[in-house]
Length: 267
Image (cartoon, rainbow, N blue to C red):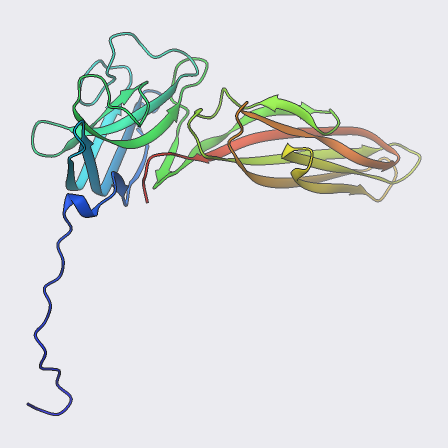
């Protein structure tokens, strides 16, 4: 044996079995369809592990599929004959496609059960429909859903903190964390300078804030703050102004949702 050479036999790399894998997706990405984004979503994943109604697991590699909520289909559409209602929280599942790989199906059933007509599935993504029963468009990476455009919770509000407002129409009820952005504008009158604090939070004691300071008379100042907040049971967030000093004559605050995390077991 030559010096410096390890003569021990090489171990064979372990091949993952379904039992080694958690139910869900690894390396999942996706986005709203470029042609029909209001009804169709496209996903792909490096690995997906499904589970059947008896608890047996099966793993699939390098899968890609689409789902269209306007279509009634056991694979590639929704699992019920009637259209989904406005503002519905829709769950998308990976399901066997009959050709040895996986497709997608949209359902109102929870991820703790199976979609209608299927005995094997894995969670894929949580979608939210708007008041026109169209998909709120976005991009997916793992368990994160980022909206393509900010969704308004409050527009030009002037209330004092902590005013509650619902975001239920914009976020799936099953979401874990919600990502908010808020902007505020404050103005002073001709008498001089002033300041006011913009607030955003789950409660009066759990918040993100920024202070608008207007250094001159008849001037304005703009501020932005962001907040990642755990989903609240009533799906509300609190916003508004506080700590007003000096000669503030006007205050306006807008709150947006721009993303959420999902209970899909993805990573």
